Image (cartoon, rainbow, N blue to C red; front, side, top):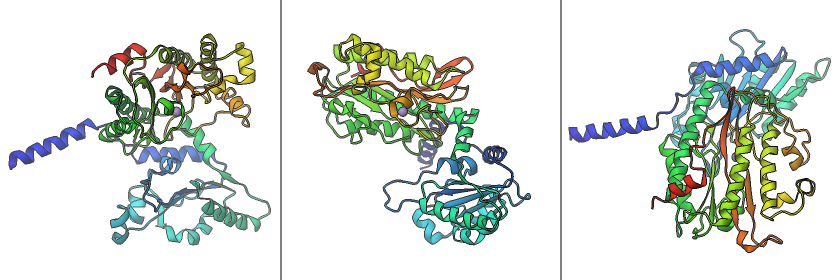
Amino acid sequence: MRILTLLVALAACSSALASAGPPAPGPDWFASHRAALAAKLPPDAVVVLRAPSESEDLLDAYRPDSNFWYLTGFSEPDAIAVFRPGALEGKRYTLFVKPKSWAEERWTGRRAGVEGAKSEFRADAAYPMADFQKESRALLAGAKALYYADARDKDFREKLVSAWQALAAAGPEPLPALDVAPLLGQMRFVKDAAEIATLREAVRLSVEAHRAALTRARPGLNEGVLKAVMVERCLAGGSARMAYAPIVGSGPNSVILHYPDANRTMLAGEMIVNDTACEYGLYAADVTRSYPVSGTFSPEQRALYAIVLAAQKAGIAKAVPGARHHDIQDAAYEVIVDGLLKLGLLKGTREEVKTSRSFAAFFPHGVSHWLGLDVHDAGSYEFGDPTDRWTRYFSSNATLRPGMVLTVEPGIYIPAKSEGVDPKWWNIGVRIEDDVLVTEKGPECLSCEAPREIADVEKAMAVH
Ligand SMILES: [Mn+2]
């Protein structure tokens, strides 16, 4: 009996060690974000942030709102934070939370409550959510600008802004009401050491999961098994959830960019696109690997894969300080267009293909986005032309700086019955996506350990 107890204790201990990632950030870290936001605000501003309510259909477990968490560390649903940086000490930070109630907590989970909001989350004052209407007048009074984050709660925003306008109407001039998200986007753009450590862990787990899925793939297996392998590795490694809905598509599904089902039996001779990654400590990895179901690339799969891989390497090489974000897009695009022209899958010259956008039939998406707390992270792209998708991709003018994290993810997808395309190319989809940290020394690929070279993929798959 005692031996059994000891064994159980040892097992618990070793599994705790296996999932020991970087420590969760402490209250000072969140306080530093509140101070940094205060420094960006005009004098006498008030900031009101909403943490959304939990969905009642039980379809999705609640995930904290990224901006709300980044400023407060508070990860319960249905809360409001109010900041008045210019107010007297002790009146600068107010939290409205769901009060403690065992009758409710036994259904939906434990709460910090009003006292915990102050003692654990350093709020100067805290109230139950029900008191927000009553208390908000005093909190808004005298402020000269309102900044809000509504977490897509339109009703909340409309009520807040109309209360603000009613207060402002009494004064001599109209007072601005602005979305705070762009300011938070500036702050979240460059990652600090703690964030990079957390991202590394999300990526490390994702790489491990990709390796496991790769070695599991074979003809006759359902796509859902690969998805399950990915989810198992992420959750067993300490992820609370996946970073986004897994995309595991074989054959005809490999050309569907965000194929959601993962329930088809994979057949020999097909490609798999597996775009799946773990979240860790609320930070997202975003990794895609593409491989042949049977473990060996056909000549056509090999040809397309080689182009996408070369395009990805060309894109990653551009992720250096001082470069424009669209340099990554431009470099990957050129390799893909030249490769498709060479294979005869596109006709004309590089310039003609760009003007006519014929490339979009096989390469219909951009190659890079910011990565962080959100899989499509906050941070401006500084698009030259925000109206048109392709013009946008080629006009993302943001200047890269050390500490930024981004994806590089070119792809080629040849749908069945593509006009003028030999059927031997049909239903081949390839996307290769890695997560790249911009450093002083150049790009650091965080996820390239997941087999990516053709020889490495085939070798990893040859285990069964
Ligand atoms: Mn991505």
